Length: 299
Image (cartoon, rainbow, N blue to C red; front, side, top):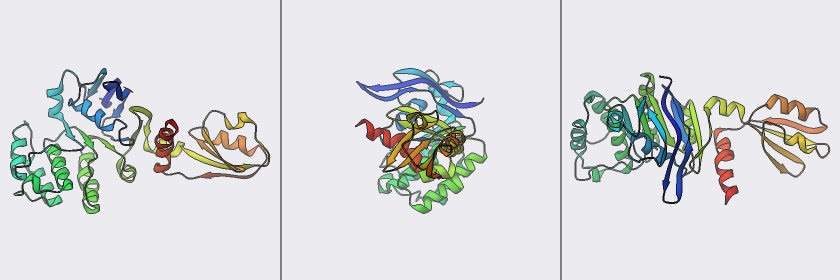
């Protein structure tokens, strides 16, 4: 199986509002795939459709080769899910919730639960309503891991975590999951975390996937050229293939390049100029170009 998750034209509408639009998603097996987007971009809805909590309006989807529309029960045996706002019974203790959830699965690894309870310093005798939001999320994470799923769907998994617990999640928990060859899909807008762990990314804008590739490819292809020409350049120079966006600042041009960097550089170099340089960009800048700036441009 080459893909752990694959969807075709997957869509979800709430009334007249489109939450997800014609999603063609392909998550390689064994990868850590980050779904990135602003709040309301459709990240949570996508995960809910994949696990069977929300029924798509149209389209199709498969997780671990199982149809998300017709094989939901079998799918949930092999797919772990942590929602953005975990629903836990407030009157129960941590220990009681774990015992309750243990009975829902055929496979359950108690040593893993005990190890992570200790790692996150979760008080087993405390009631859920006594826990902070971060602690509730840590418990939900443990519950999603205990059945040893082949695929993990995590919605903002470190929300409410303090810096120490966030580091523990990535350096210990996620590292262990990845070392076992499991597939992880993380919906988040924490770009620093993504750069630390993801090898594949999907950029979402208003429910649509606007870019999907490896993280290395995204960072290597997305470049910015700063150039000051000696005279007004011809229009075709700034509109050639590979030029994604041109921003003018006085006599200087900031040219955002998504591919053909070498060819574009050479064409600029052949035209009289005072300054010509490639400016390094980070994931946050790339994210803003694809998602936030386009969002603002529509308003």
